[in-house]
Structure formats: C-alpha cells, structure tokens
Length: 489
Image: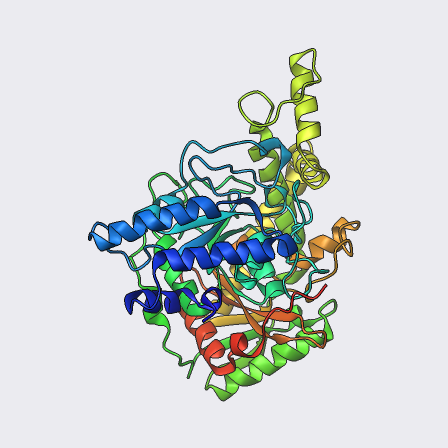
C-alpha cells in the first residue's frame, strides 16, 4: 500500500480500521519528503523530525481518550505566510528570513485543537506576489508533472507538495488566484472561499481586501473536509463574517440535475490556449450529460478586472509592507549611518525585485494627484465587477471558466516579462475583486501530459453549490485514477 497516495478520508478509514497508525502515516510522509523533496523543493522549512515526535505524542493521547478528533494525527503542509508559533514564517522573503512567529494564526489554532500534524512550511512567491513561485528568495519549486515547469503561484509550494504526495493536503492563500492557478498547474483541487468565511488573523497581509486562506487537496471530498475545519467567525478578524456552521461534505450529492451553469464567452477568447478550450468544452458536454443546464453568457468583467485587481492589490501591498522597515523585526542592513539608511538599505536589500515593483507602483497609485485617477477609479470598477456577477447569479447557480489560459509554463518563460506573467491571472482575479468563492479542479491533460484546470465560481457563501458541482464532475471523470505526475526532467 502506498500510504502517501491516499486521500485524507482514506487515511481516516485506515486509522479507524486500525490498518494504519498515526506514526506509520507520518513516517511514510517523512520518507516521501526525504525521497522527493530534492526534486520538487516544495518546503522552505521541513518539520519531519518534529512531526514524527508529535505523531507519537498524539497517538498516546488518542489511546488514552484525551483526543477524539477524526483528524488527530493527519499531516498537513502550511503556506509560509501563515503564522506558526515557534516556527519560521518567512513569506518567501529575505526580509523575514529568520522571523519566528510568537503566535499561531487562527487556522493553526483550529488545527492544533484537532491534533493535525504540521509537516512543514511550503515555498511561495515572495509575499505572495507572483504566479510561478519563481520570486521566492530561497528556491524555485518544481512542478511534479514536469520538473522543468513551474508549479504556479503564489501557493506553488503547497500545490506541488500535494501533487507529489509530500503531504495529503495543504493550506494556501489566494489574493488573485494564488490557490486556484497552482492547483490547475499541478492537477489538484484548490478552493478560494468567500471573502470573510475563513479568518485572516495570522495571515501575513499582501492585499487585505482580497486575501483569503483556503484548501489545496487531492480530491473534492478532502477539500470540503478542510473547509469544515477552517471556516468560521473569528473575533480577531474584523472582516470575518458570522455564518451558520455547515458540514460541507453533506453538500456532495453527486447530482447536478437542473443546475444552471453559465459559460462566459469572454473567458474563452483570445489568449486562451486551444487545448485548454477543447478540454473545457469536453467538461461542458459532460455536465450536460449529467443533467446540468449549460448556457453561453456574456460576463463583461475580464477586460478590466486585471487592471482593477493590480491597482488595488499594489496599493494595499504598499501600505501593508510599510511595517517591514529594519527596525521592529525582520532583516536589518548592516550598512547604515543614519536612521534613513536603515530604512532604505534594509528594504532595498531585503525585498526582491517583484515586491519592490509592486510597492513602488502601489505607492504611486495612492500618491497625491494620482489617487483619484487610479485607486479611486479601480474601486469604482470593482463595484462594476461585483454588479456584473450579481446579474449573472440572478439567473445561474455556477459560472464555469478556465482556471488559467495555459498549462504550466517552463522556468524563465514569463519571468522576464512582468506583463505576460500578470496575464496568467486573467481568469481568476475577478473572483477576488467581487469576494466570491471559486474552485479549480482538473479536467484532463494536454498533448504533453500537463494538467488543465476548470474553474467553477459561485455566488457569495455558495461553497456548497460549487463543491457539489466539482464533486459530481470529479466522480464522473476520475482524474486521479487516470493521471499521475511523472516527475519528468
């Protein structure tokens, strides 16, 4: 039995039937990391030794009846912008290279109560700014399907770790597609929840009005289970919404009869790879076979969503990253004579080029004389995007689009052209602008064997609807049974 190929719900069954122990599962993942991590480079901080020790302690607690959670002893990977007490939280940046968080994020507190085991902090684009995990200050994570290609970003480490069976599931964060796009590239499931459904307390902020923590998993059932664990109101997060507690696994009915799916023609136009279009068309036909009502619609948001997103995101990044100044914590330059030197040199040496670019452009957009022309206009456009989605959801339950215009690209292919890299997010950013939930699930592979992702977008707090639509398609097509990463070099 290949333990690391099992889903979380399968691991739970093996634990319940006593076919496996918590320690056996954790050691299997530790061995898998030892075998494959040099190829994939998914982790900034690996915690395998600590995890094995923790597994033994949790096993004892379970035997003594001190811990009764179904998730006790299940390993997980955590994106390195989510604070973990006593463990480095670097955000993939030199400026936080030695920062050890003094507290746990709310989602980590929830995991600790359930007895989950942290296998490590996963690699990411610096401060979540990127679409390929190439801007990390530490290493470039490789896509397990083809090690010459990127895993997507910014949650590339989490997606690659799940795809390579280094962890059974992981947490990512999504500001403009940073869970869904790497999930698409790595052939796994990634969910960006509705803004406010999951606490952001302890998530190092990139763009506060867009950021959201979410699950990256092997299948949709695991995705629903992980959402169960992390969703819920949190007094420490003023943007957290009070909602009824739901069991999202109960929404997985494996039935889409009568479901109204809108397919916006604007998301299938110029710039979308032909093989991606073909696989999405096959998925559309499959939904029709399954009894869903599918119609082509017009959703006029793609044209200005990207510009709107980047102006808002960069402006908020400029504000949020002002705290990293070489004084309070984080990296401090050794080259200084004055206080101004500390600020300038620490930030110049500590931040990478992509982060500097976004801070500068965000500061410009917020500056006197330009605020009305750029930031205010972007906020007005944000309202238009939200209104367009509201109109669509008055008639349709789900909106279906590609997750990404292409499959995973090779290292260096877009990193020298920032504008081309930003276009990688064109299918995903509008979801964050409007605060909606979106899920990416694999819908096949291209002629080179690289995964293609399909995005399902729901109305606010309609996670149950998109999870069921994703689950029904997944059960009908069995992607994980038919395709596996090849680790080609």
